[in-house]
Amino acid sequence: MSVAFPVFLMEVPVPPASPEGMRYADAHFHADDLEAYEPGLAGSYRDLDVVGLASAHDGAGLARTRDLLDGAGPWFLSFGIHPQLPVMDEAGLLLALASSGGLAAVGECGFDFFGDVPDRERTPANERRQRAVFEFQLELAERHGLPIVLHLRRAMDLLFEYAPRLSRLPAVLLHSWGGPPNEASAFLSRCPSALFSFGTALLNGNKKARASAAALPASAILTETDAPYQPPREAPLPGARLARDHSTFSDLPAIIAAIAALRGDEPEALRATVLENFTGAFAHGL
Image (cartoon, rainbow, N blue to C red; front, side):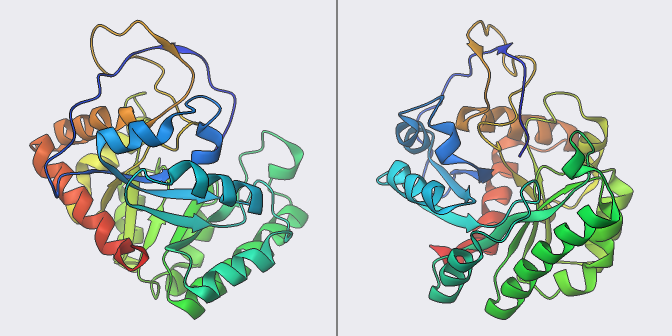
């Protein structure tokens, strides 16, 4: 998750509901934050026939996510302490959710040393704080056999450091993967349960993400919107004129099309594979 994106011009037509078994998978979105842009988000989720992993980080966000997605169709819950706010205020709620079987995944969690604010500079104190919060969540995922959703910025060395423990989890979702294919392949060899989730960065021309999406095995690929936080900078489909400053579920067809084009695959075949990868990782949460 990140903030402060420019307004861009786009309007993506929403296709009719998908045939059974051909849903779009959105591996990471924030319903409570998306509401500010799309109060009727449950309708667009349902109409596009999405199955997704909704991320929440506090009790209020969790309650609002549940309300917003009521009646929207199947969805999963991830709950975690974000590395951009590495404090343990919500640790009790996270523990209760994991212990009660109320989670499909722990996270998003991980490390953020992007350096855009002092708390995200890679200093010894910041690293200690982020490690402590991450290790609490990793231990929780290990104890309850849960997948984990990782947020990583300028922390690739730590991903590999924790690979032996991560490899024991049922799935490791690398949210908004933007690394090069050699790093993706190297981590996948150490953590075969890794899933690399691609979103609108592909539409924005991220060369490393595009190269990874082209090179990885199809069984390791997921799609996401990170809605509302990562809007495409340009219209993914021709004829777009409507200003929008957020990402949303209707970006998923363009994301699938972009990955398929990079790989030389048929979009519908890739869409089916991504759905299979998603449900395989989170089926226990349905």
